[in-house]
Length: 324
Image 1 (cartoon, rainbow, N blue to C red):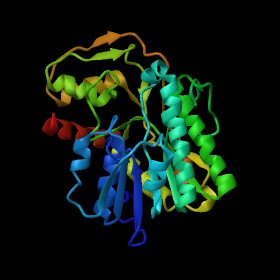
Image 2 (image 1 turned 90 degrees about the vertical axis):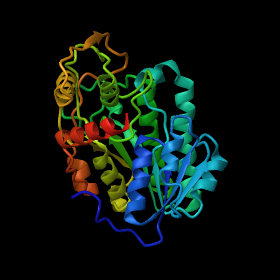
Image 3 (image 1 turned 180 degrees about the vertical axis):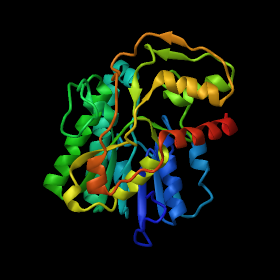
């Protein structure tokens, strides 16, 4: 279980795009701890300079300032790379509704640039971030690959397009691609600030500063919240997956289901607070309920997550207490 004993060839070089972001920086950290080399490509538009500085003294770490919308930057970043972990993208469903053209250029064309650069550079495995948003209005739970609904946002469209392009690169160009449909990832270094901050770090920041959080909707939305360690495991195991598993997308979650209102009261209890939330309107484009069937990832990727929501939220609370 986990990824601590995963082994790659001794001189392996990983490229993590978006490596200055939340998920990307955690991937860089894990790869370095395992003893391998990592190159981080990021334009720092949403990534943090401090997430680069964390590893700047490690000789196995290299930072490249570049934009995935620029093919030449992608080609340079892929030189000599064995494994690509493509995390570079702009998130947030509401923001994508406000900026559809940018999401097309960044999330779709940028990923296509990375696929082409990886192909030309002879990369062994191309693992990329997709999203549970591709399930759209499909009402059945748990969410299962191959049973998707109508897409509800430009962000969801961008991730679905990424999956289709990746499939083409496996089909026609022999590049082994693996799409990871993340379900509400949370954990250390997730940005708690800004209008588009994810719910758990935003709640924690507000509660730790004595502010009253606002819950969008009635709080009865449910999510399969997934701790960052499970996502690291999925990325690394996908790098070792067989060719037969390539060209497909996989649910990456713990397989649980938590309601936002329950999370809110759980956080207040853990922090020793007695504070009622505010309630606001539903966010456009949001999926009401989300819960993943992870059996396909278990079978074909060897994914076996051992960080439950309860274990992960305890670790997250501890980290934010120390760092906010």
